[in-house]
Amino acid sequence: MTSVDYVFKTVNYGAQSVDLTATVHLPKDTTSVKAIALYFHGGGYIVGSRAMLPATHIEALNENGFIAVSSDYRLCPTISVLDGPVSDSVAAYEWTQNELPQLLEKEHGIRVDGKNIVTLGHSCGGGLALLMASRPNPPKAILDLFGFKYLRDPFYHTSTSTQPQPGAPAPPSDEFINQVFTEIPPPTAARPPFGPNGLDLSTPRGAYLVTSVRKGTQFDAIIAEHEYDLVDPEKLLKISGFPPTCFVQGTVDVVVDAKFSQWAYAELQKNGVQSELYLVEGMAHGFDAKLKRDDAAFASIQKGVEFIARHVVG
Image (cartoon, rainbow, N blue to C red; front, side, top):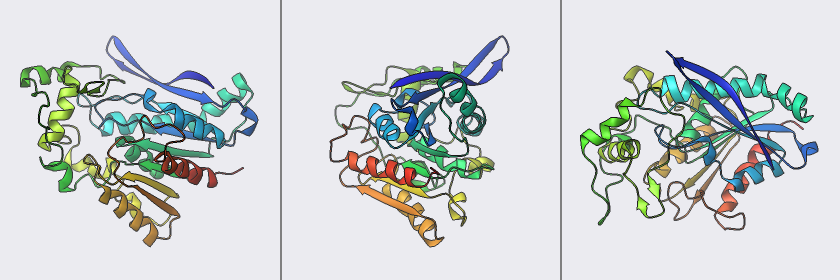
């Protein structure tokens, strides 16, 4: 597998600039390419990076005829969800459709139609993948892996879902946490607050994410009230022409309640949209991050990839 990086957008901040990059994962057998799969990473809009697309997922996508693409977006909270993650993901989507096919043919001899595209994502990235249904040339299909949706629901705005466990590290001071607001320009990558020894609150950004989720204030500083409909796929899910969509969801997820995928699936079913829902018993948020291809739980990911592959041309 060969991977190539391309800058798809540059944002200027005075004398500084931020390059937004997409990593394109090419399959060994380029003759089998039939479509492009654009991935958006998770991390609550605040942490994470395009490198979070697991190798197992890339392999499954490549085997099903996809060029796999993973893209950057600027991270909150020094930019809003609308101006950062959503705007940059739209830019990545349009670049992938309009410019990447020319680069693939010129540099790698691969011919693929940019309109033959699907989207997928983890967590907040799943919500971003769903939002691409609003674009003029929407995805042929979408794979939502425990994605953010129904963002106004009280679940996200209460302090009851993810409280610290006994023995967990105490949160740092507000002074330490608030250092995250000095990070301008906004970064495009930050490590999640979960290390080999468990919860890691040693960075202001990681501590900010964990404490805001615990308090139910995660969205307060990054989504204005009048912007919810622009960053939440809830209303899009009600349209009859929504792209075919597969939902994969762990049943014990305390970050994104399983009910949201169930609601979305029911909505699409009611509207006659081709859709599937895989509830993975006993699995928590991010359960697929370190799975091997032969792990039982990976079957849900495999089925999701096969679902989106069935809806592309070729």
